[in-house]
Image 1 (spheres, rainbow, N blue to C red):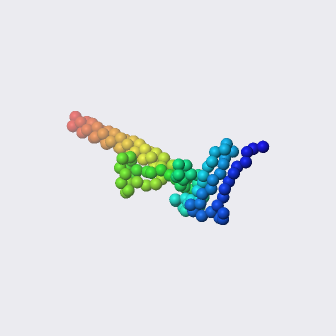
Image 2 (tube, rainbow, N blue to C red):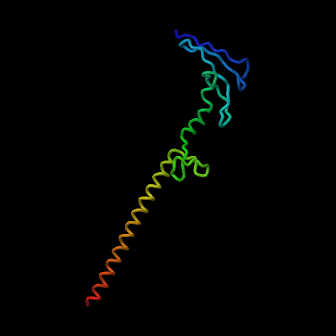
Image 3 (cartoon, rainbow, N blue to C red):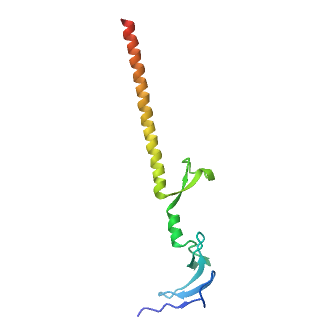
Length: 135
């Protein structure tokens, strides 16, 4: 027969700041506190460790925050000015960076091709001048 879990509950529906004490199957005593998510305000039970609540966010907010990244618009990671920062999801963040690479690659390719075309046009015009001068 598994060991019993002892739980002491607050007398009525919990209020923010109410604590419960319970004993785990291993015999350890744990404390939980009724607290609110700091992001959305949803009330929840939170485990206390060293007199501090362990999780300040509810699961929904924690998952949403785990999926968010800070994007530096100019690409300089040390530039933490507010106007340079934006919040991006993981997918959008990687697309932003790959888009920059793709655009840069295309621009470099087109610039190089256009430069080569101009060089060839100059060479052909010089050759035409030389041929017309030789005649």
